[in-house]
Image (cartoon, rainbow, N blue to C red; front, side, top):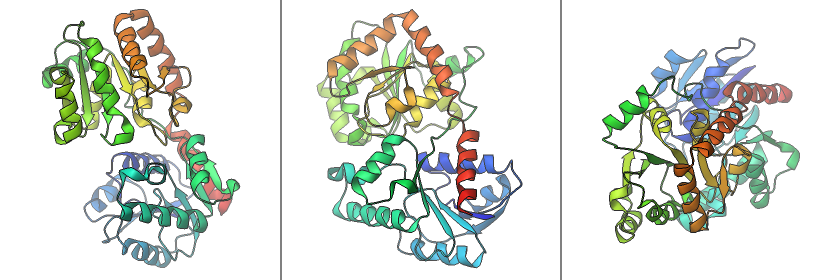
Length: 363
């Protein structure tokens, strides 16, 4: 087959991770050919990095133009199967079509989005489910959520869990963790949060729980992702809760620095109310970092029994879990070992193999 991949989100945070790792796995097999549709700024690196052909597409993301221009290029390129790694499946594709829908957050939490954003997501997800020959979801939860909001034959929906890069692994020594602390001027132990500050991430519950750490000298909460100081409600909450001196916000980190953050942290805390999969919990487990997370959405599917799962709306439970992990070295060691075993179940090779098998079943 000549398989077309929409790679225009190659460097996006979550979807970009998905595209990059699938493409890297696809490079290692020679049965099929691959054509990547790339944004102008990404085309050269995709061309240098991956086996196959790269076609530059000039249309903007989430534009009307992309819905026509990508399909025009794919139809002319002799593509036999097209995979959209996001719900924006172009119109007018003349070949077999696969789409990955990672979540339906626009439909589950409409209050977080503008009327235009909600309408666009509903129309495009509905179109993708109707037009695709197969729909990939990252978890059984994501599949149930999709079917809850969008009419779609259940047999068309395929659960293919994501993976974690082999770069996310425990350190052979403490050098990277120590370097991370020095680089970011972090003294002592810290709990880590990784992700955006969107309301469903429930970061406010984490901030309110930090007061439980007051008696533990130098323990901080380090946030990686969107900066807290740029989010007025959460920044104000830090101040009003009297925990501004206990919270560090580092912004988005390059992958090597992110891996060092996981290795240095006493635990990852992820109180999210909604996830289609949940990369941070898997990355943390792969690095040997204990995980405290909510028992909501897809998170229990990823963690299994390898972390502390709790009600994300129960502030006292979150605080108690944070204190337990900080104070109990035996608990930390147990979570570390369980997490390392659990993470081995999620590999990009397995994800790519199942994705290729789906492609071939449609051919």
